[in-house]
Length: 280
Image (tube, rainbow, N blue to C red; front, side):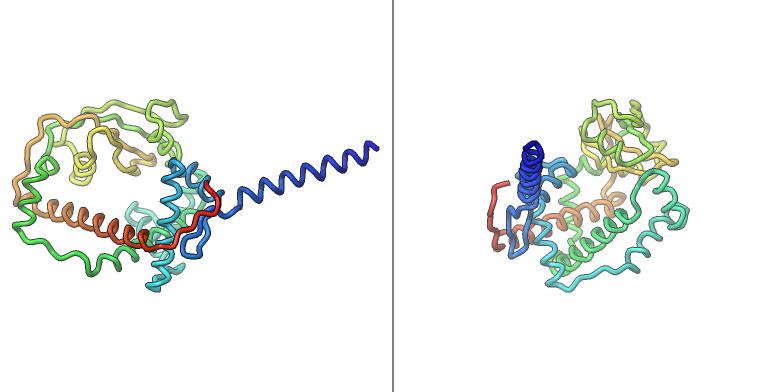
């Protein structure tokens, strides 16, 4: 009798587990015949720190990107990925083998890195194709007007007040960026008052182009990963237009690129056949 009860219990348990697994893998949304599962939505929420609604929109956009890559015949092969990784390694004064060794010591997965690199290259090729006919070079008058309207972007402060966050790996630093006040193991924080005159051009640009109350992008520095939380810019002075012209052009172009990309995918989203089978 006990044996039968045990068998019934195990059967019920396995059935419940199977049902739960089926629910997790269940299709939630179909985008032009391409499925998005409940698990994919959950994973996007956790990994990217998105709300359920934003995770759904992110995944829909990813499906639309995949469709565009197929439609335009855009591909990236192993050679492209390895070549890009070699370029990145050389910029840091090492080769790809040394880069792989460093990543292994930090517990970072090499295959995951290569997959990420492939996705990056595919997106770059896609965006380049989308933008090829959508942006015309600006006139000098257009750039001067943009300069006048965004003068604060083309000013250099005497001093930058910031908090420097440092960590031996990107994951810890990413967690600190999500939770700036939390004590994350391995992450150090230090208040800084940085004189602009002491910075090289690249770091000065990085800091001054980051809005107050935001983090800069993560950069590698002497075996560590570093980001700065910008608190304030002290006594900013505008850069003369002729000196800032190249920077004005780059920012104008980047703004137009972002607008064109956003518009392109908004149009695709509007015409896409999106079916919700199960509410996430």
